[in-house]
Every structure is written in C-alpha cells, then in structure tokens.
Image (cartoon, rainbow, N blue to C red; front, side, top):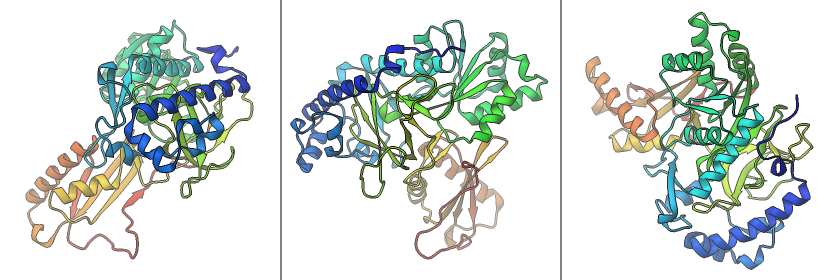
Length: 436
C-alpha cells in the first residue's frame, strides 16, 4: 500500500533543508519571545542570553527552560506574546494548585494545529471519503477540538461526539458507518467490549483505524483493541502547552511517533542536570514551539521520559520519531486521560480540614482506570455512624472532582490506619500494567 501524506513536501523534507528552516524559525521565534514576553526576557537576561546569541538550533542549549511552575506563576496572561485581541481561542489543562494552565491561540495557531492533526489522520489512512468519529472530550480539553479540526482539514465527515454516552456512540458508529475512531485507548477498549456485549463482531463495523492518545497504553492493549474493533490502532501525542494532540503521531510502521519538526523542536535532557543528551539516550522530553504566535514556549519541560530515534523510517517521513513515554520525571499520574498530581489532593484535604495523611490507589479494571483515595480521619472527625461517614466521603469526593476534573472514590479510614514510612511517604500505588 502506498504511503499517504497530508503535506508530502514537508513531511518528507530532506534533513538539511528541514534544519535550515528550523534555524530560521528559531532565530525569529526567540526574538519574538524576547521582545513580547517580559517574563521570558527576564529569564534570558538572568542567564546572560540575548537574541543575538541564538544563530540556530545549535545554540538552543543556551536558552533557559520553562516549566509548568512558570506557567502557573504567570497565570493568566503572563506568557501571552500577542495582544489579546489577536487571540481567537483558549484551551486549558486541569489546575494543580487551583490555577490552570491556559494556552492561547491566534487563528494562525489554530490552523497549524489543525494541520498537525490532519497529518496524523492521513498517516492512519484517512481521506476525504472517511467518517471520523471524535470521542475525545471537547470544551477546554484539547483532544476533541484538535482531532475535530484535523478531520475538517482532511475533508472527512466529522462526528463530534465528545466522550461518554456509549449507547449513542455505538448507534452513530454503526448507522453512519464511521471508519476512523479517535478517543482514549481505554475508551476504545470499552467500546470494543460494549459492541461484543450487544452481539456485534469486529467485521460488523466499518472502522479501519483508530487514533488513540491522552493516556499511557501498552502494546498488549493495542493488540486487544485492534482485535476487538477489527482496526489498526495508532498512537498520537501532544500537550496543551504546545498546542494539543498532533505534536507527534504514528505512521503505518508503528515504530515511534513522528514529531512535526517543522513546528516543534525536540530535545532529550538529563532531568536532574538539564544537560542535553544524544539521540538514542533516555531522558526528559523538552519542546520548543517554532511557529506559535500567541503562546510560544521555548524549551518547555514536558516531564515525559522517552527516547528520540533519527534512523530512516520506511514510511518516507524524515521527521524524528519519539518512543512512547516511559514514565514521568515528576509524580504526575494520568488517570482517564486527565493529569492528576498528589499535590492537588493534598491541597483539597487541607482546605477541607483533613490532615494530609492519604493514599492514592490507581488500577485498571475492564480497560478502565479506577481511582481510589484513602484519607485518615482526625480523632475528632471519627464517627461510628455509617451515614455520617458516607456524607463526609461524598462531600470530599465532590471537592476533589472540582479540583481534578474527575471523581475519585473516597474512603475515610480511622486515625493512624494508613501505614507511616520513614523518609518520603509512599502516597501513590499504581497497579496498572503500563509497561511490558
């Protein structure tokens, strides 16, 4: 089967030509950020760097890093690099301390993002004759809007389903003959199970491919989804801070995700020292946005641990490939596609009058994440009545949902019943088999 591309000249650009383009874009972007983002200019000045010091990608290491802490510190407008009147949209992550990270987009930014997602859809076999069912969440979450825009660029019929309501998902999938499914891998697995429960066989649907991301998944899970839905399952990667899904995507070879290097420069660093590591070594992934106008982040630390591969890909694309993230350099959990930090839970507990003695347990049951939070009661809070404890659990669960965006099952337990440990407390037990 001949390989298809959305933008062949760009996706198969010779490496020397691509590097020349990256050099030019980086020089322009550094000057834009220095002139228009006072916060980052101060970071550059603190490091003794000016735009004149950056002649191309070889000088990228001279620039200071950005982290999510910087984005929270500058909330809401401190990293905005254009007048607000030039922006047409925001997207947002879940907040970790009550403050969310807000990403801004000009129309140009939206168009480029849509193109990146279109590349992913075409790499998965998508054409204007396809029916693309988007079951990622819409609204502030980037998943739905990203794949929706990409599908429009390709010219496919787009079903903007959003997440949930599986009965309706199946009805539209079967009646409108959806051919490409876009959602989290755990939801794709659930749809496969739901179809089987209703008596459908894989050959009864018209699906040929799925584009799945927003949470970690194994090769074993990929094979299970492919078997249950009768499709080829493709990985996609992105983060709100750099635009959303479509920063990188799999081709038919499924040997890593091609990073859209004409828009995003990737580095691998030692997470402890910040030293740039050679290709092929495992470390923390860092991105620089080359074309973003409204929210151009330079050397943004993703905290994802992975490896870059520049060996030629049989698909013909010349852009570097990234392995599936192998974990994170911080303590963030991804639960049902949502970023969750233990610090978020601690913030809520303290606000609600509980001591910060807690344990988080995450598991995967029937291809869906379970999320339990065990919280110690203070002696004065302890009650023998089940109804009182149940009411307190419900109230705390609601408070956590407002902070996290998803609802954990809260278990209030007697004082001093959670095991103590010397040194760093073991707050998280993740039972999911995310690594083979």
